[in-house]
Amino acid sequence: MANKQKGYIDIKVGGKKRTLHFSMNFWSEFTEQMGISLQDIGDVFQNGISLKGLRALIYSAILANDQENGNDVDYNIFTVGAWLDDLKSETINDIVNAMLQSKILGNSLNAEMEKPGKVKPSKK
Image (tube, rainbow, N blue to C red):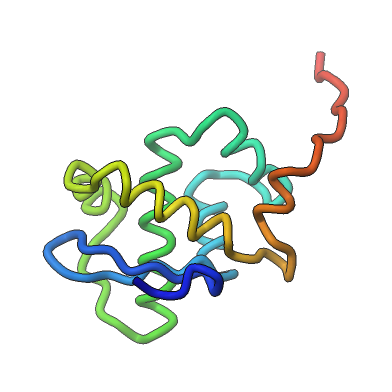
């Protein structure tokens, strides 16, 4: 397994070992896939992650690593979605923990998730 502190984790999925990298490239792709802004990331994980969110998280992290390293991209988001059936719950927990240990804009994501939320006015 790769260094979770640096935002890397290796998993076997799609018939081979793949590295997920929770880098700025990951966050850019993840927010685009989810259709959210950087400020709304906490909301995605607030009440547990959806299947769409989990699929986007794993896809974006594999894609970030492969594109950063010039690897062939032999999958798309739907292919990754099909791979989710083969992942064990422990592997998914390891992936989420690696993401939580990563940094975004130099700040620990784990620290951001633990901060009390700001009160937002309702939109009526």
